[in-house]
Length: 103
Image (cartoon, rainbow, N blue to C red; front, side, top):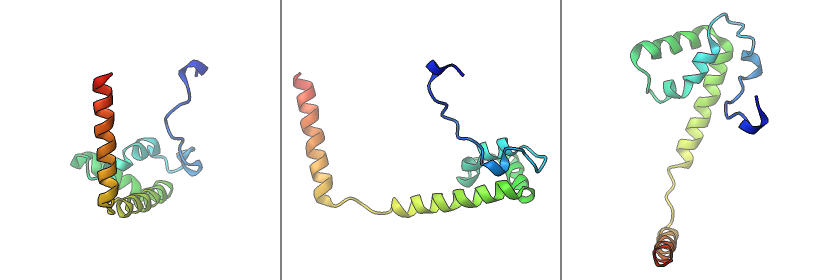
């Protein structure tokens, strides 16, 4: 990779999955894991990922980690900002809009 391209944004495979020791396509399964977790895959694609998870311990462990992360994020996103904070943010956005318009 050329240094001018900047760092890669692709996340590396977990060490246990780099070899693809299960003989199946770990890369494809892991790339589709979030879609699978969010039930965004069509039935045939979802079944392919589900079947892979059923026979690949490494990918199943990664799936378990992602489920925990997703649940933590969901739990953290249930809180709402206090009304005073929301009002202050709204006021600041209004000031920024007016200032930008006047400039």
